[in-house]
Amino acid sequence: MFSTYEEAVRWIHSRLRLGIKPGLRRMEVMMERLGNPERTLKTIHIGGTNGKGSTVTFLRCILEDAGYAVGTFTSPYFEHFNERISINGKPCEDKDIIELVNLIKPLAEELEETELGGPTEFEVITAMSFYYFAKMAPVDVVLYEVGLGGRFDSTNIIHPLLSIITSIGLDHTGILGETLEEIAFEKAGIIKDGILAISGVHQEEAAAVIRRAAAEREVPYYEAGAQFSVTSYAANVDGSKFDYRSLFSQLPNLYVSMMGKHQAENASLAVMASELLAREGHFLISEKSIRSGIMRASWPGRFEIIARTPFVVIDGAHNEEGIKALVHTLTSQYSERKKTIVFAALRDKKFETMISMLDSVCDELIFTTFDFPRAASAEELHSASKHEKGCAMADWRSAINAGLSHLEGENMLIVTGSLYFLSEIKPYIVANLAR
Image (cartoon, rainbow, N blue to C red; front, side, top):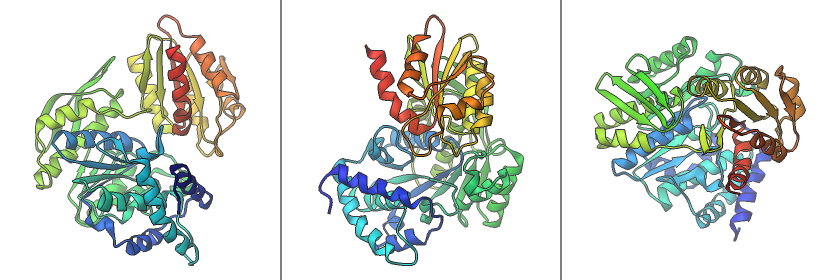
């Protein structure tokens, strides 16, 4: 039995040695031993390559504004492990983590003695969340973010009120497939027979796979650009404004504080979800709650402006789709500013294409690394760049300091790449700027 929070979290992280083990049977066995707490929950399932966390946040804020207690299960955490299991944006307490780990650990040890093998880190945390929301801190609804893929993800034992697929991109190709169609097939695995589904996927080859899955499972299906859409998008320094249209309504002049057109599109998924949940009688949600909810929503590490004087941004663009969205925001909203970018990435990402896009948009590019088993070295990243003012700095503190030293006038610093990297460096940047 663990008596401290540090011991409990250390045990959870020790499960990383088991890697990724696709399949649902270990989760099903653990849930059976716990009395199937997941079956008592009202849930909404959110999958996709990018935009999951933002869409969860938009929808959470809408439901909160409508007066509901909303649980969220998200990954990875940004600054504190407990963020992964939260209620109305407030992470669960350390004592809850200790209690949950002491509950799950014997089940994990029992599984280790079977042919199924012990549960992975993510499976352990998912199991903890089911028990927490069902038994320890009951809520009105839980928003479950898929960890990886969808079809065999440990969250996929739920039977939600609604399934949302945000986007499709070439990420985790070694596990999910090398093509958009293959990845879309895995993401579409969260669509359940007869359960409402929404998609924000824009590539036709991927969208066709999801449409086919929805038709095969006979679900009411709503697709961005068809049954609902974002129109009249306009950005400013504080966010953006857009009009929303669907089969059911027209909502002009919706405001979001999160930067980039992709965030307006993520917000539209949450608005469509809200409309469907209200029409199905699951929740009472007014237009006022929709407007105020998406306006106040914020998500750390997603084009997060740390300071305006000097201008410093962190953005967790950790794959091609994320970098593409970042580049679009920088060119469409900050074209007049000189840009220094500090970039770190994981070795298992296809960072060559990502770096090529960054080469095209910045005035200076600094590559660095951080203390993480899968982190690419600064030299590996630099070797993929053709930028005439690119350099490698193995110490990320030196890289950040170099970037900050170049800030004057209308210059801006963008620190981007792995979310694990951003979570490590954000406190350092904040403290440095406060001096």
